[in-house]
Length: 413
Ligand SMILES: Cc1cc2nc3c(=O)[nH]c(=O)nc-3n(C[C@H](O)[C@H](O)[C@H](O)COP(=O)(O)OP(=O)(O)OC[C@H]3O[C@@H](n4cnc5c(N)ncnc54)[C@H](O)[C@@H]3O)c2cc1C
Image: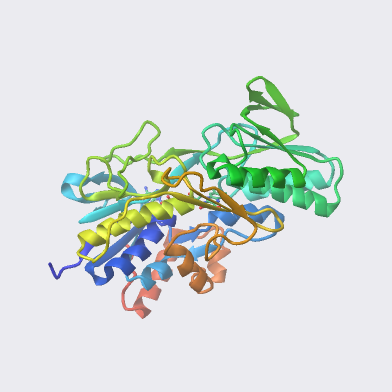
């Protein structure tokens, strides 16, 4: 076995990238030298963004510098614009080339608005727009809100959470005459999770007085209604919707017509021998953090085995775990969606996995549970809306001086 560690580059700084980094360090130990290439030095825990408009919590932000350092990974602040697999090189947004031995692409997907005129759950502006909607309900300027799952949305759970939390909010505020509804092309609510989960969600919606229009595709937002296909409409003074996701295709790698990267069950990109991909960036149809982490685990095991670690490289076998927030007690939903174990749908108000994180990653979830306080960015910087990569570069530079050079920014030499 070569004494030189295998040089692994991970592109991205989200769920799949972090899960892969932690898994690799634990599985392959010093057999790998890991480099993380990410355009931003922060990671935001998006599933908690649904709490923000209600003042119940925030999408916690984590400092990637600290996480990389803790796992002995070099960090390079850059975006990647292309891959040159034959040369084992990446081209960054600022025109630099970086080499690699093995590469893992985890660049997520791009959210696009699917229903013009709706409040779309994407980007930093969403919280403010949703707060305005809540204020309008409180001031009785609007009465009817439809929560619309657009055709092609790949992870509908956040919309159910917003509908249920709005219902809880309305009830706590004692607002009468409010009509909330969910409009979805699904035949059953959250049908990805199977029959037991759908039944539990149906009961929750009824209990919270949220009407369900299943089997309806939201088509157009009008002044006081949401038009649906097949023929029909749902009264709505405001419509809240999810974005559709598009792939961020990278020149040099294959992609489907929507820009997603095809892989095998070990994450190896079609036609490539040294390039892996995981998470929302891939063609796997359900875009969910827990599944992104499971894909990252499969890729990390394969890479660790290639680096000489005594690890069995198991294929991706998707198991969905969703913690549905309601504004009151959470509902835990679980289903094996690999097709390998028949009907595995379950739902419970008791925790079905541990730690009970929204993103159930085998390595990332326990790590965050153990370190969540120390991983947050310094308070002053985290609150700074004008925070730029330049400021972070300066900060990381100072940090590096004090910390044995684990974090290298701008140069990997
Ligand atoms: C409101 C909301 C609620 C959600 N709730 C849940 C939930 O309850 N449970 C759950 O499991 N999932 C949930 N999800 C989905 C989950 O957040 C995603 O599926 C998950 O983040 C995907 O992980 P990823 O690593 O593939 O992509 P991301 O986490 O999106 O990370 C992509 C990374 O790649 C970087 N990047 C992008 N382009 C480039 C480039 N060219 N070069 C280098 N880096 C690049 C980005 O900066 C980012 O760091 C929710 C999502 C939303 C929006």
